[in-house]
Structures are given as C-alpha cells and as structure tokens.
Length: 132
Image (cartoon, rainbow, N blue to C red):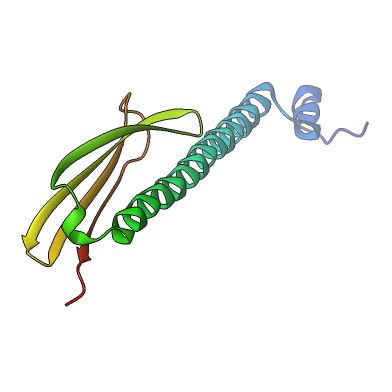
C-alpha cells in the first residue's frame, strides 16, 4: 500500500472502505424503505379486497331492486324489511325501505351494512313506478 507523506496509515485505510456508521446508516435507510413497501402492499391488498366486496354489495342491491321492479307497484308492501347476507366471509345486513311517493310511484332505499361494523357499506335510492 502506498502512503502519502503526512498522512497516517489509519487515515489511508479509512479512505479505502466504509466506516461502521456509514454501514449502519445505509442499513437503516434500506430497512425503512422495505417497511414502507410492505405497509403499502398490505394497504393495497385491503383496498383490493374492499373493492371486491363493494362490487358484490352493488350486485346484491341491484338484484333486490330488480326483484321489486318486477312486481306491480300496487302489490308492494310499504315499510322496512331486513335480511342478512354473507359476502366473502363477512356478515352484512340488508335493509330495504319502501315509501309511497304518489299512487303510481314508490321510493326504494337499500342499505347494506356490515354486522360487525368492519367493512365497506353500500347505500342506494331508486324509484319503482306503475305504468300509466
């Protein structure tokens, strides 16, 4: 090894590699980056699952609305009705409220909420009309 005048051997060795503090600093920065990626992937997975559940909730609400639309408006029973659904392993309560707006028009409110309080919800309002 070639050592310049006025420079100690220890200072020359320090220039050739990394110090312990530099290695620890690099490791900390790398670890924080890895933890952020893991947290982001977990959050993305949860959002993807909730998106699938929301789609299924919309389909179940549309099915119920279609079944009400197929019945004559005069035969619909006004008031509230509730039932329980299981979607992707989660229990949901579907409440359907029918309100007469005019003799030919009824408002339908459908709300689907998780029983345990954990998960996405869905709410929609539509109208069922009798032919003139």
